[in-house]
Length: 176
Image: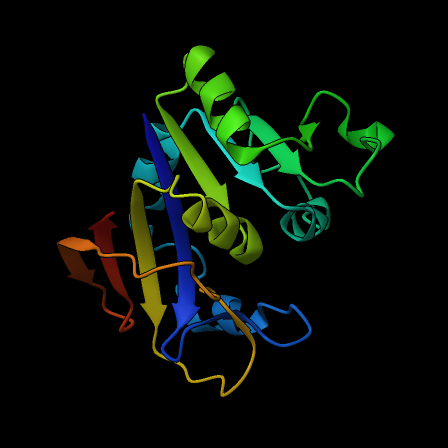
């Protein structure tokens, strides 16, 4: 089973501004969503999305639910209840990440998408990520929320491929 991190960062490694805003990412893609960047292929390859509370708060602000027909698991000890408008859209999990991955594998998941900076960091520190797809956006934020935090040890990556896009985006794929 694959456990995949799939995200975008500024050229200086930030996933969001200090206040959590990602408007710079939306502004960077002036194609108005016409360029796919491989997102559809990746999304079609996943069975389940695991995200943290902060990512879920952002998703809840979207005009419509973006994860139709996908199992969504939200991590968090603070999130106790699913809002009524989102019943049957996601489930809450507060146990060990290893236990979650085993449970998802036993339920037939072949690929899990890990979303959100802190969640990706937690999965990396538990040695659960199998591959990373990261798109570098040609903008320098100078400060913000980094994708990677402190790690317990060096994590060696194997470069699989990089692809460039007309807007200057560079998507690189690594295996751990």
